[in-house]
Image (tube, rainbow, N blue to C red; front, side, top):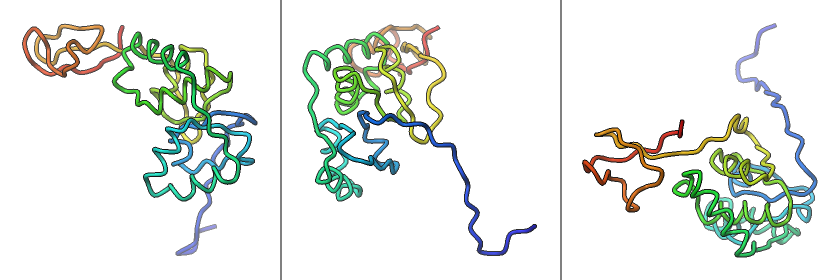
Length: 178
């Protein structure tokens, strides 16, 4: 049986069983996740601010008006997430919004819905369940290090906060720690 020209083929993708309550990352909302009912899901204020600036702003504000819960995480949880990200070499991959999402998930004991692999990586180390929305999700947890593209030396952190090797001056690149 052939397809007629112009017909639409529907691809059925497996749906992940999403929890009744969860913290939403901006990526989930931007990728089309519809929190139904909205009052069962939580976002930090930084997600609302981040999305409100883009094309999805009107949709975000509609979700907030419909009851999407907006709650700021505590400073202690934010510090714990930041420290864990630093230990793993993920601090350069984390935005303030990412820290807020993980801190809120940790604080409330709720999973976070995100397709961000780096966010899932830190969540796994913190014992926070991360549920991917469209992507497959991480298969293993990685720690990162910085390797000089010139002399090959490795550093546990981005030395000096720059992107250059303090020994030879060549660029540093993040690589998985072995």
